[in-house]
Image (tube, rainbow, N blue to C red; front, side, top):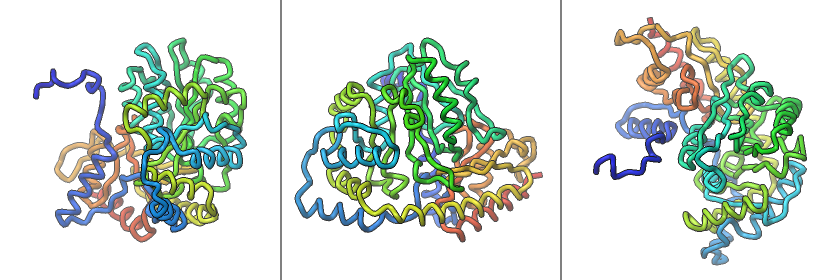
Length: 401
């Protein structure tokens, strides 16, 4: 087929770099190579048994048919209760949308609202799919850079300057993928004050890492901090990260009734309802005993501390301490200009990622997230595996001259 056969909207789309790296690492492992995959964003813990039991019960009860397009009444009620009890946000069932993962929910929202002249402000570094979803919806991503100096958090003043009459959405992801940075209540208050000045801007609050937060930092979502923003905020969440249910594919959102209805209309012509069994499992996750989360967070924080200390001890790497999620995002810009064992100079973050892969560690280049002098690694692996990976990273970088 010629390129003319394909839709022009694909011209600006980049295949997911994280999935591409994960696929390459799996292929190398299949060839017998010893690869430690630190590129994939999913917990290594098994889905808790009580959640599996909820799925088994649904199967035995014959809940294997179509459900309402954007979620069963049972799951929507559980989500409403979750927002009320954990975030002090009040919603009705008709303000809830459930999709096949948070990614579909965001896709539905942008496809339902973005016109060709609309802009979406995306803090950088960003989750890889944000700009591509905006492009597919016909909008224009506007990147708002941040740096390690402020722990990869934007300033209210910079946000204010970035907003134009064309701004339709502002994306806020806290804790963040890829940096793990998380905004405090006071920082969200300052951002909210800016957004109050611009009533035409809607906020997409991606809270998928809400429960994975460390150092006794309290989680807040922006509409909780400023209730006046609630009518124009779409709060996105899901069960993938907190409950280790990435393969179950359940994401959800809460927002304006009419927006939720339009999102459902789109989903009705794409996938229709998410898996009925996965929805039953999600009900179990949201309504079951949450005490295991404390243990998981403690384990993740210990892993973070081990990897953070190891990476910051390597000359040429510098990594701020993340407050949430399960990623580290070390800056490797100081290594640019050094020479690889082949004699080729290090010019791109992909050169470093390639070198690490040669030494048996798969990471994702920072350019995939809009920050081309870093790389992302996930510490959602055992302590022994993480220590081995950091040792290999140190060996790889010491091979530069």
